[in-house]
Amino acid sequence: MPQSINFKDTIIIRARPDTLFRLALDPRRRAKWDPSYAQANYVGDEKLGNGTLVRFKLPRRLLGLAFTAKYRNFQAPTRGAWESVKPFGPVEKLAQGWNFKPIPGGTEVTLSTDASVRYGFVAKPVERVLRQMSGQALLELQRQVDKQGAQLMEDTAREYQQKQRDEQKAAKKAGKASGKPKS
Image (cartoon, rainbow, N blue to C red; front, side, top):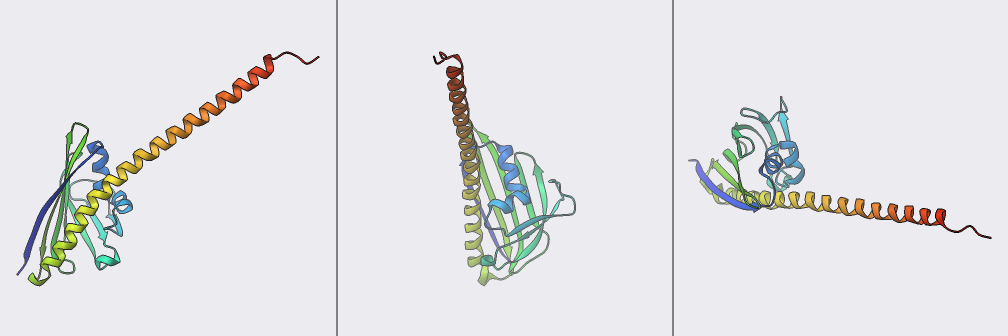
């Protein structure tokens, strides 16, 4: 008899909803930052939207299972969700829903996970793994956004330092050119 697993996790991230939406729901971007997925690729058209099929592969530590999911309930940039098309491993059905609520200073991100497992004796271990995946996804999303901001600040600082060096060199050259000739 199938067992249901349902839970939600929420975090506040200092970023715009559209940026978080693309990071969380575009499978190619998601596979780059989320360690819960070894691979994520579009099946067919490479376009986000209702009905789009995506192929996910979990890492070896999560048994390396692969499954196909279909996007549904898609409303950019405030929410999006996907649901597995067929059962895989002990999981009958797996669905994730993302909500991005703009708030002052950032975005409230809620990740909902709904699953159904085939056998009752694997419900607790599967729920533990899914909760870990959910929490890790939210933390890694926060890290990804922070990393992008830190890189931007670092690049800006480098450009500023280079500009100062160039100005100093130009001032030295100007000082030498306008200096008194040697007798």
